Length: 259
Image 1: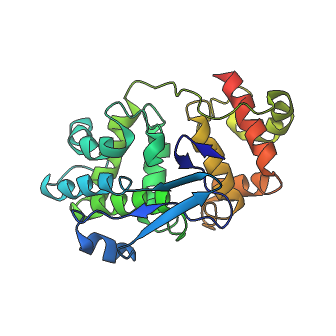
Image 2 (image 1 turned 90 degrees about the vertical axis):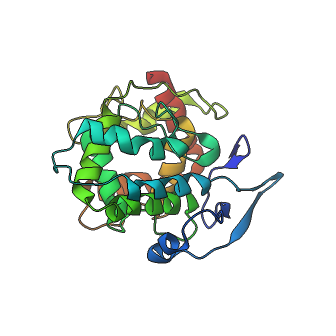
């Protein structure tokens, strides 16, 4: 299945990868990623991803922004950092399906912080075939390079969490929401019957359908959820493993009805 010209990864499929020359090679070396370019071929859908890594280059500007922010986070500092994030995620944090960058506006601060730390700690975005995750992993490393990891992470998370929430438009062909409702009961115990999440579980109604489907597949294929210290991710993987592609599409279709 493809979303526009951007295929959602399936098992064993590598996403398109293109690294612009403007990107500092030392960033890639630190991340263990070599220069290169791969095509993606999924049936009649074929693309050469020439833009995905361009947004990472913008994050190199973070090194010149300075540091010294307290670990509790500072919204003004976060606003300084955010333009680098906006290169992929959009000026309103609305996301960009063509860059496989999700909506981040208004997500819980703790969740944004936690995911940034997952990328920084090498617990997410390390699977070679996951080029979208690898791009974000590289982007997150720049927060470390700017000199004050905790301050930058906390500050940008605070700023992004205060952005007005964006309602993502549907992009996928409709699945069977009735069947999806049945499958969703396993999700509801954590994410809530309304999909708005709980104090330590993120909302699913806030996220785009293409991203939800892609993440379900990544959990099933162990691209996510393998950090033994991340109990939530481990639970998520256990719930998702039994689902086939059709069941996942149906669950996402049902989540669309909750928005």
